[in-house]
Structures are given as structure tokens and as C-alpha cells.
Length: 98
Image (tube, rainbow, N blue to C red; front, side, top):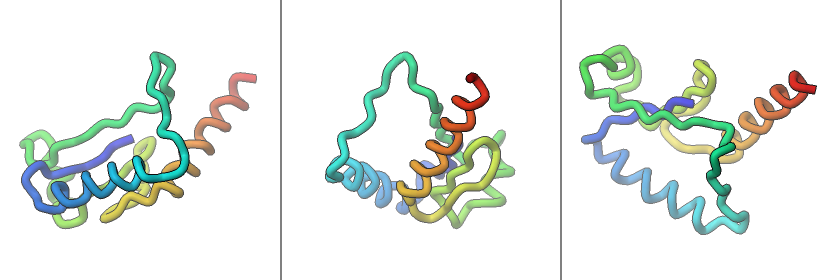
């Protein structure tokens, strides 16, 4: 999953603490990261020259999430959508193994 960010924008400074507070204040326990964690979160700094394509596309729309190369959400983190899509991928992978 890609999380496209711009290190120097105020939006990131604002949204990161909000997202962390939102997850830590929820009633559900936070997931435990182990050696068997199934998903990889890749943070992309769109200000770097090699990421200019992402800067041109999303400069005013961060944060942006892509999952398996497809657009998922922007501007806000919707944890319900994220969890639903991750569960769907997990079920698909499990059915392919069996």
C-alpha cells in the first residue's frame, strides 16, 4: 500500500497526530506487528525528484492511499474502508492457498 505524502506541508503535520489519536482512542486493540505481518505500508515523499509524477498528480490532495497499485482514498484516512479492503485481500489470498 502506498501512502503519498509531502514532508513539508502543514496538512501532514495536522493529519498524522489526528490519525494516531483516532486509532489509539478506539475501543479495538491495535494490531500487533510480528514477523508474519501481511501488509507493507510504503510512505512516499512526493518532493523527491524521482517521485515528481506523484507530486504533479497529488500535490494538493495528500494524504493519498493506493492499495495494490489502485487508488483507495485521499484527503482523509477512512479506517473502515481501509480495514474492509485489507480483509477482502486477505480472504482472496487465503482462498487461493486452500
